[in-house]
Amino acid sequence: MNKSEIIFNLAEILGCEARQNEPMSKHTSFKIGGNADAYIKVNNLSKLSTILKECQDSDVDYIILGNGSNLLVSDEGIRGAVIRLDGDFRKITLVDDTTIFCGAGATLAYLCKFALNCGLSGLEFAWGIPGTVGGAVFMNAGAYDGEMKDVVHSVSHISPNGEIGRTEKDDLRFGYRTSIYRSNNMIITGITLKLKKGNPDEIRAKMDDYMLRRSTKQPLEYPSAGSVFKRPEGNFAGALIEQCGLKGKLCGGAQVSEKHAGFIINKSNATAKDVRELITQIQKTVSDKTGYNLECELIIL
Image (cartoon, rainbow, N blue to C red):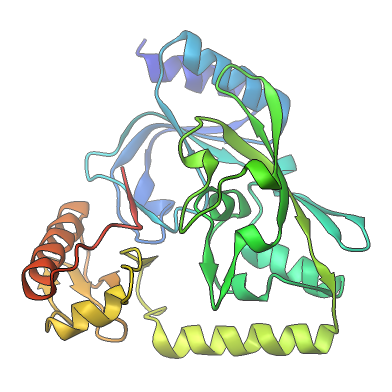
């Protein structure tokens, strides 16, 4: 029995949905990625704690998967366990008039709708960002002059050995596409958000406006992982890539979007290798022609 089978068997004993040799192309917005040794949906904190402890004791590598929307998984797949937060981790509750508690596995879309239905404003910027709330906090996702740091009050987490904890707003170290969770090895389990009372019609109008902007400017009709590169200081990645004449550039089945040069799309059965090679070519060309060094926002496994 290999190490990942130990985790798979434990997950089944715990009553989790578990699969072996699961294609990660099914679980990433890029529709790219080889097989994971074990893919496990965990529906409560107790089961997550048990699985994490066993991963540590058995020396099994694992990743926590959100919506797979900012991720490029290798063609060779993932050794070890891929853990998806489900069940309790997808629940959202209204704590008081302006406070929401949200499980890390809930989608941003669900959270935005929940806030709208409660007449709460502050999350409109996130409408259309295709990730989970945990993933959005992890990387301080943002758009249209809003970021998660503007609305997050505290974050609940669990350590690899099963210890429960919480980080308050002032200690979250939010920055451009980063937070303390990028380096502290803790797993985000829940988020408390502070919003403001608003007019539901105005909130909905702003959400509709942002979604219209996304659909007209972004290549939503193709599989992608959103913006590939971080915004370089004093410029925009998409503008630099377009300036270098790279719009529409192909590498195998991967293409620089003709609609928005900051996106790479899976045009035709692209592999992770195609995407990585295209990223390298873009970075070299932009550096040579403009002097800007583009850093990936995309997480590459």
